[in-house]
Image (cartoon, rainbow, N blue to C red; front, side):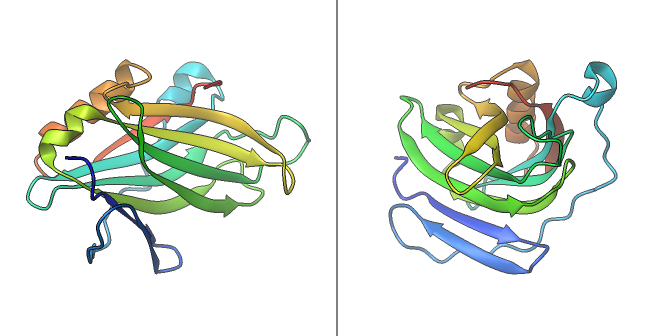
Length: 190
């Protein structure tokens, strides 16, 4: 059963925790996750200045929690203006039939072509459900109060957007509770 998912967002920069509830109420706590910020993008060396995102995935088989940490972005551009973009990120967890289970959004990071987010999203579920869900990460440039443009997106899990994303998801499932960090080149249109 995929009902009863709950999402917890932890902003380690500000030290605040935001809970977004979907389904049954439950208390969740999460200790800060350690990650290396010195990890550099190999994709940029291969593809020039392609927009990329560094994310970390972790599945805890004991608690049934899937953690997706959005660490930082690289080469984000504002196509409409000659200034750095004001970016935000949406994460959407889908069931196998493209039914939305939960959705979260990272606050806007203003004027940064290489923003650092350090936001963690925790989805409550079971290990066997990982084969039946898709996590979509979309990056947007907020141009004005009502105007936004998509910088790019990726999907991981059942309907992965590419081989690298599928490999990241598979490695996370097999990692036995260890964080798996990967850079992903963003696709241009959804």
